[in-house]
Image (cartoon, rainbow, N blue to C red; front, top):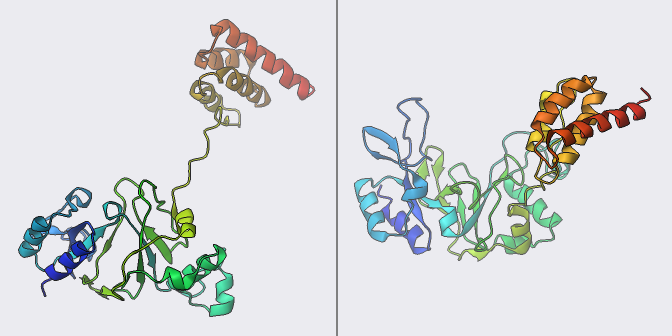
Length: 302
C-alpha cells in the first residue's frame, strides 16, 4: 500500500505534513508499537526525525520522502497548518466521568459516554450550535474516535489542556512545538484513518476559541507566600525573591511570620537582613525586622 496519494491530499488541503511510522512499527529498544510516532527514516537504523523542524509544505520534499518510505503514515503539524483539531475519543470504561463536571451525562446516556457526546454537552453549555460545529472536515481515527478540524485564529495561542480529560483533547499551536495528528489515509494497528466527508475546514466558532485559547498566567504576587513551620529558609527566599520595590513589604511580612514561628529575633535580623537588598541597606533591614517582631508580639499578646 503506497500512502503518497494521502500525503499529497493532505498537502492539497494546505496542511504542513511529515512522515510517521508505518502500521505495526516496533521500537527496537522497548518492543512497543510506535506507529503514531515520527518516522524511523531508514529501515534498520532507528532514529526519529525532529518533526517540528521537518514538517513541510514543499511538495518535492514530500514526494521524495514517500518515494523512499511509501508506507509511512502522513501526519499533520497543527500549528504551522493553522489548525485546531478536536479529538473525540471512544469511551475508556464505565462511568469514566464520575466525579467530573460532566458526570450527569451518565444519568442520561448510561455508563459509557464517548468524546463526541461530551463535546455535545460542552457545546450546549457554551451556547454553541452542535450541528454547525460538525459541519467541517472530519476524520475517523483507527480506534473509532473522531477528529474535527478547525481553522485557528492567526496570532492566538491555543491551550494544551483537555476540555474533558481522556475523552476530548485538542491539538493546536500550544506548547513548544504544537501538536500533530495522523492524516486521513494513515493506518495503525488499531485501524485506518478515514475522511468522513469532503467538507472544507471551517473557522473555529468563537465559543470554541474562547474555550481552547491559552489563558493568561495569574499575576505574580508582590512577594512569595512565606513557608511556615519554624524554618527560616523559606522566609529568606521570600525576601530575596520579592519583586523590586516590594522588598520592604516582603521583609516586614517575613519577619512577622518568623516571630509567629518562634524564630529568635537575632536570627531573623541576621538572615532576613542579609537577604534584603532594598533602600536603606542593613540598618533599615534591622529596623524593619525589629518593628515587625514588636507588632507581631503585640498582636499575639506576648
